[in-house]
Length: 573
Ligand SMILES: [Zn+2]
Image 1 (cartoon, rainbow, N blue to C red):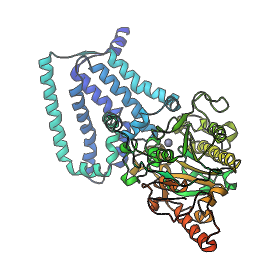
Image 2 (image 1 turned 60 degrees about the vertical axis):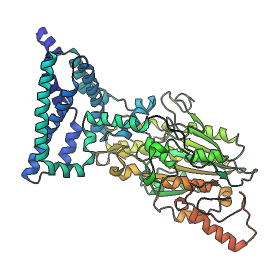
Image 3 (image 1 turned 180 degrees about the vertical axis):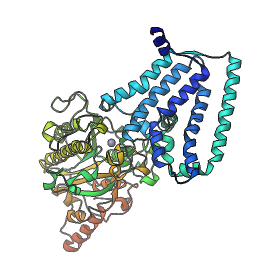
Image 4 (image 1 turned 45 degrees about the vertical axis):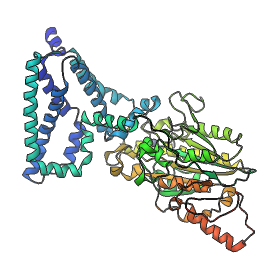
């Protein structure tokens, strides 16, 4: 009995058996997500469709066989296969549980995450999954006694195996050419579900796109300048970057549950139809600060050239980036920045993460030292998942029951949504707190814009979290809240008609508007400014003309003189 158990846990295999077993294990267990996709998408309207569906497992088995025939050689086979299985087990968990796809931007999220973010994903179901589908097979492989033929025979057998597999693949490929062409075109994401090629290819793509030799930094506009500033009342603008907040869960935008009890009484504008420029922080954040619109935007270049904070700093703004979300994705690399450590202040932090309240205290402190034009960016942790329950203090547990776990897919949807809504409720409080801090300083020309980086799926169509490829992403991941508050002083000096802007609050907007609208509002003169993307301009122009008509010479701007705004030159606004 003991001997049989020992044999079972130290299997004797030929190299050929190892290749077949590895192919079968990947086919059946480590590609569950791929099979679910095939099951949902493949048509079964005719006999050809059925035969095509039946051929897919054989095709994948042969493909996996080719990979293992080429890679599982003496010395390296155990370590290589153990790595592939362990990584595939993790990828499989994420794809099955959260319905995500593995591509280069997903690998970017993996490589550029921090310890706290990674810890957020740990939960018992992940542990069991990895133990069963990753660790056990890895242990068996490491203990296996694999017998290889002498080199000559091994090479001959492999060549024969490859020939048979490739011939069979050619036969299947040509036989179902039309079916593959149509099905492949309609389901381009399919390959991102196939373990292990999905994460190997995505990792290669990630390193080739983001980790190549650094190019020299590109200055897009060396001649930026600032509109004349009233030295007695400098502009101080707060930009709050939301995290994972989706527009539809804000009661300001029509959500049935009261998630904005504080802001509903504030003199703000909620822009209800704003589309994000990406579905993950790493993708959206650099794009939000880039002067390029999404159709012209290339992330690799954008990371290495002027963005809005660079230009404002060069023009004379004191820019400070306060980060409670694990980093600024290279956007703040050239300005003053502070990443808040997870143990920064016991009042808000538990050693793993901090509530966003920590940002408000820092904002109040920063305002005491303001000397000239200032931009303060508050990068909040907002509704960062999957541990939504860690994003708000107990006093904000208003909607219940909640899902107090990171394995959100095991909670009923109602609990997930309650937990998420509590995090929005806290965000409402944070934004209002920031406004109150600014209101305390009428000696400054203050304003605030809150905008989230991307949205979130909360179980709709079985989808969770975010990060779906842009063109396939649902509205929940793309529509983000955006909220504006301006002090009376800034409204006046920028000739902004707030009622006009309110009337336009439901117009479609996108992250593409951010660079140009903020450049205009903050008085940045740059050739990169494009007036068609300035959401404030239609309401500044009207007031400007109106003011000119009514008063001719009696209206004097607080910030310098007033010129009619022109493309490429936002003088004195
Ligand atoms: Zn994000």
